Image (tube, rainbow over all chains, first blue to last red; front, side):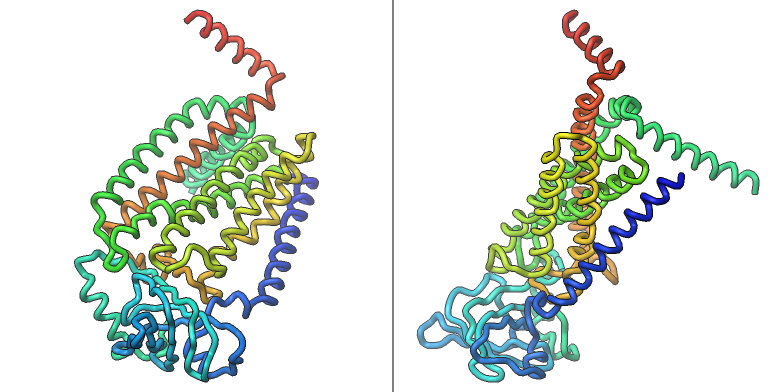
Length: 154
Length: 266
């Protein structure tokens, strides 16, 4: 490389380094806000206001889904196999909703471990499995907390 | 030892010559005469076969049924949106450092293709998200950073076309492309650094791909096919741009004259 090219190379490298540093600092500043959800363990460990809205994510606990008498309000427990949060939700659930499925619920805390949700989303994981193995897979997911030490990731 | 040295220096020499040949618009045009149809053919074959395997041969997913098949378009598009950005940023750096004409051509011709793949990744992701997640759009780290990538692509294109003078336009565009490169690792790691609705990587992850070979094969074929599609469209666009930029040069005038002559003879 000629001296001019070397100089330009340095300038380009410094631009990349500067942009990288700026991005790093910016992301550091918004770090907590970039989180999409909190987990039941974090709910247990932290203080959360009852007036602000949060998203929590967890596995739908086996045998916890109950439908109230109006037919559209459901109450279920989400868990990370360590701690549980009860979620109450009125409305349509996503097709993937079932025991052992990871879901994201958005709403306000009525109590320390009880959320009134306005939205429930299914959180799909990275696993793709042929449908002949569906039964086994879904059972393994529903029983995950019996076989795995928490907190699990999803 | 001498033999090994000679081997490597001949390879280096070949790469060096190819690099310099590609650096000349005229040589690029000659090479693209052959490369363009080859890329087009590879794209058609790979994508055609991949789509056939993906739509008719691969089994349905255990919980998503057939709606998971959008992955065969979504994931290659998302990969390409990042790959094209890396190509564009590298070409921009080469253009800025070595003042190579063709590098700028590659960079600016890549931008709309990359933007198109980003758009496709966002749209197919949204279409998949509606039945699976239960929402079209959420502001999670992955989705938001990919949307920013689309805006970066648009910004780069807008900057290039905002200047009348070509050299200024090229340098401004290249500078923006280089600054914007920070978005690429952010998009890639967004699902690891923060909790997100979007799932983590299925294919490139610790412990190997989390999908059977019957689904992985069409996915990789589609990804390879899409890459050749990018190359194909890039060649077409770059050929066009080279002809336009070099329209006053002798070789282009002769090319036009000879193609006119064959046109009249027919």
